[in-house]
Length: 223
Image 1 (cartoon, one colour):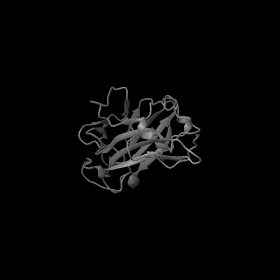
Image 2 (spheres, one colour; image 1 turned 30 degrees about the vertical axis):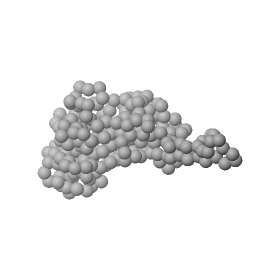
Image 3 (cartoon, one colour; image 1 turned 90 degrees about the vertical axis):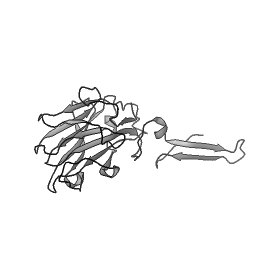
Image 4 (spheres, helix red, strand yellow; image 1 turned 135 degrees about the horizontal axis):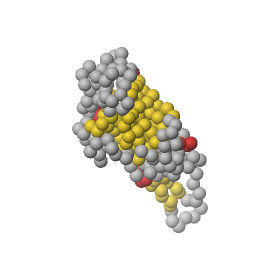
């Protein structure tokens, strides 16, 4: 159920676990657990793309997520993730794509593509390992439309090697609401209205109502 937060801290490996599937048709480097360079904590998912053959495809595929609790008439939702990457050469064209499915993987729809200098404008000729939070980029995807708000929603990251450098993913977050740079881990973080105050009590003629919103939005309230 949402909110979903994946920091990879609970795993000893990404192989043979129910939370993630790994596809590596070229039988070379695949997505694996990295235990010392995570953005949050020590762990993240890594693809050792440095030195991989151009055209290699690798996938990291999620288990089902229940989005059926969302109301298409009133709710919004966001899929966010953080990645770290630098090109090996200025001409590299590594490509990251994010796909989603509402039928547990029978059909996939493309929702995000990042490649070349858009994936990273930075170049490092040696094997890349993120050294600080500044090496990480946050991506927000508000385009998981309501026809994908089902109980067996899944998403996957597909990486096509263009001769570039290593690639890392961490802090995957799926939550109700608009894009947030904060990690959303519980209901208290994504309630629409907080800090509600109604006064004075008792009231004569005029009632004051104060509240805070977690983001700019239209709110209908019945008193």
